[in-house]
Length: 359
Image (cartoon, rainbow, N blue to C red; front, side, top):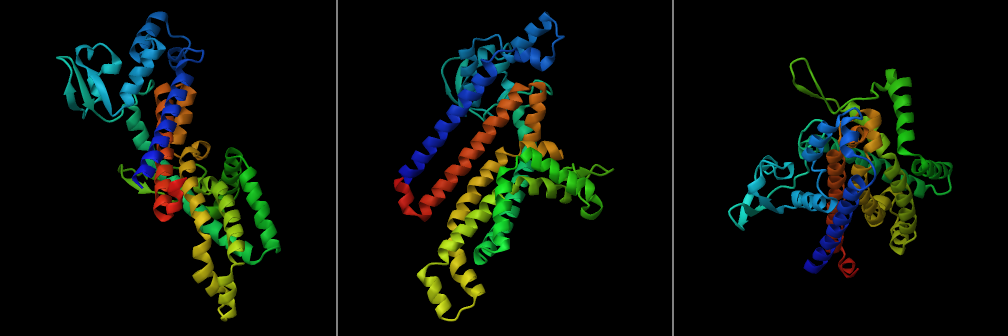
């Protein structure tokens, strides 16, 4: 089991390294001056030179990459001799660093939290920006997968029990439409229909956050603002879960132990809840666990449409101002979450089914 965990973790680290290299090259090698794009075309050359030095853009590309990896690595080299003259070596970026080994009087090996740089626009730490927005995205993704799971399993079971009925055919058509519809277009339709046309009946708003501030500065929970974005984000996994549940249930209902249960005189409800349900959920649970990681990464358009203050909306805003550290930081954190969730899912499968360890 230990070798299985090490192998899966190694694969995940290789994926993260590939994402890191790709993201860095994308924003540092392609044509265009990030400083001019971030600060506007009217900035003068003297100011541009200062910005280049402040952003570290006056360094060669390979040196920038090494410095960036050094900032991201939990164990990195810290050069104290120039700590006041270069932004990459600013001691403020390592507030809780632990000295592990001293090479000389001015260089040490330190243990620290990964440093994602600072925003070009707000000068806030990118890690602070992400940590402020990530809980909202996690709540949105979790709510979406819960809605998709409950509705999808119920609809899939009914479709299987009434195979070839009108309901079954309609559920298949709706599932195809749910998969085919772009999230941006679907979100606009749902926002317009339920947040504008039917607002007097639904009571939900097109835009809004999980918390609002009252006149006294206190946070007030607004769960109704979660309904539309969670529904929009959950449409695709809902379509998948309906189809998987239907197909899995149809296979289970042909098994001998199901026929035996019916032969003993058990009702359809008893057979489904006590015998069929627990045996048809394996592929469904697999899909649910995989989709949860995807929803965190796929919430960009949904958050932007509904004004939800999550990492998706932050990355869209950062793209508008070419705030490179924020864009790169969000992509890397999202990729890390995706890899970690998938590693945990793989390990849980390995614990539940020893045959998977051999794959």
